[in-house]
Amino acid sequence: MTTNIKKCTFEDLGLLQEISVETFNETFKNQNSPENMKAYLEKAFNLKQLEKELSNISSEFYFIYSNEEIAGYLKLNTNDAQTEITGTDSLEIERIYIRKKHHKQGLGKYLINKAIEIAIDRNKEKIWLGVWEKNESAITFYKKMDFVQTGAHSFYMGDEEQIDFIMTKTLI
Image 1: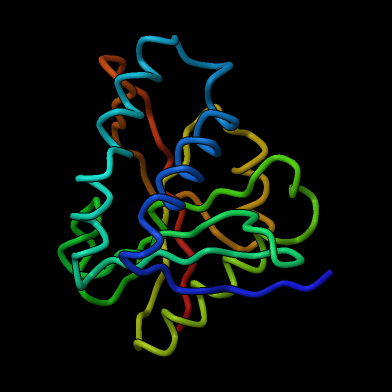
Image 2: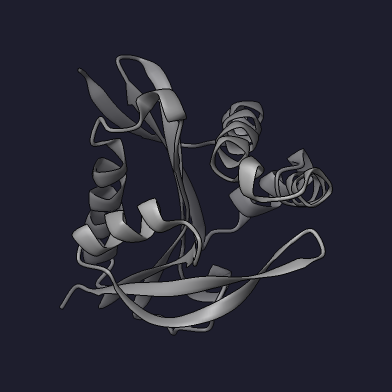
């Protein structure tokens, strides 16, 4: 299996939207109402919103490819783009998704390691993310990658408030 990572550009906007909607649906549609899924997908992954996020110099998107096929993506935030105020010494993994057909191939670990590499290159002391409290497989994965729960925050899926655990990995 050949794996590589490519930073997203504005030319990738349509593909970014496609994989964002697909992987979010695969991950969460069975645990949420169709109305809340529709509301969230329309808000978070419309082209205007994704273009705004791509334009932010404190946010970056990366595609991961498996044998030349796009298998998933990663969104990283620093500074004021982070969804929580954590300071300039941290990097947030806001989104990390792998297409279902590419699960169990080590691609999530590959993306986490890419995020860690970027954080270290930028002299960040920690890396953190939010994960839905009901996403047990993701929580288990992050624990294996040496993340620990350090807090929680609210996440809104449509009109439903959900709790995300904040998990952090210290790099220094």
